[in-house]
Length: 125
Length: 125
DNA sequence: CAGGATCCTACGCGATACTG
DNA sequence: CAGTATCGCGTAGGATCCTG
Image (cartoon, rainbow over all chains, first blue to last red; front, side, top):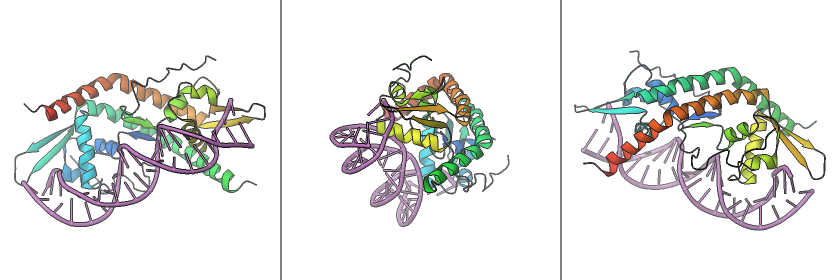
């Protein structure tokens, strides 16, 4: 399984612009990190380095609570914890893909509309 | 065109449980209200009576800003304003339908997982 | 009828520091 | 390594009242 790319999620294309959200801010990204198999906390931190460990843990716990992922602790030193998608969590992958597809197709139109709207406000000829 | 049903959105199934959000809290509901054709402000208020007019206006303006709906003011007394989906707004209908479909299929599993999780916390045998 | 103006609060999220 | 503990802020969104 390939390591996660540090630039897996482009900060220049923040999810704040996307009008669609799965769970909270980082949930969809975490789920995509786990698509290819179980990952350790430190692995997930790499592409999600803009999230503090507190928030990451928070999000992971919420996902676990809702049955989207499993959390497995290995009694080793140093400790190792692995997160893995459940079948339920995997059902979200298709939905996320659909959202991404929508974004690719329609975000340019949305942004153009937003620009046009700003102009009618600031530049009412 | 049929009038909008007052119980179109069940308050007992608040969107807060749904892990998927389109835009802000009321956006997806408004878009669904407009599916069959243009609607007046007071029409939309009926199924969305739990939102204050301020919040409704806010949301409608945001949707207009992003090119999802158009806002048409008729110079009449009393004033009449109609909101209508743009082609861009209509593209969201399919996405919303996909989300609803996901919810119908998977929300029971999610809620069961949530219950089970709570029990392991409050009742650790 | 279709809103605008004000005020206010909960909570999502981040920054920083510390630990079994 | 995989978290926890505190602190704090911005903002979405609600309550209430008012108006062209």
